[in-house]
Length: 224
Ligand code: ZN
Image (cartoon, rainbow, N blue to C red; front, side, top):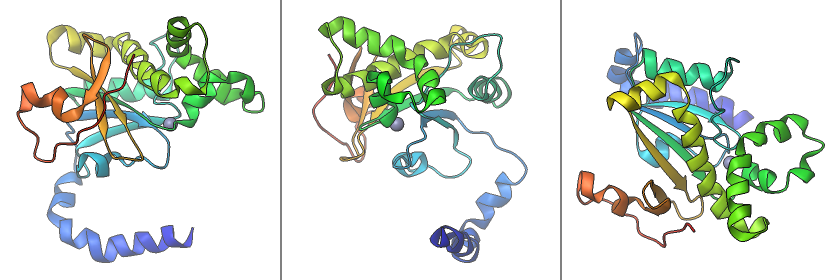
């Protein structure tokens, strides 16, 4: 913990002064363009991976980058999504899964989660993902981890669409959804093509829209 405490001191002394103007702007409000939903896993740093600064990403994190389907019950994700979309007016939502996700391993083997009843219940929101993969192969095991991870991103995007503010934003074209999987070991980000349900390297996925990316990352596409 000591390095965390000393890190705050270092931030205040060395980093904050270099970005004083930006922090002064942010002191009175935020207008992020992107709602970034990802796993709570310590190995993911959304601002580092996207090379963005404070104020640019509205970040919601939990085990498994889960978006519970909309219901009459209020939860942290539901409230945060509503705030980001309806109050802040974000225009893009990224659901970002990742490799080696402990939550996905738990979703594949829920029988190992009896000592973690809340985790087990929470990962019930990933069952549609595991069932899709189980149905595809006739069985489900740890070898399907990458596939479940991608399918979970797809299913959580489906859940997002059930939230009224998101549904309204999608209907009017104000909001665009993005499904990503971040590879912790390689730094690669794969992006969902919703038509094919396959994940392709980021430079391929966005080339048509944004042209050649300056630091294109390439690699094998995954998916079924
Ligand atoms: Zn995870």
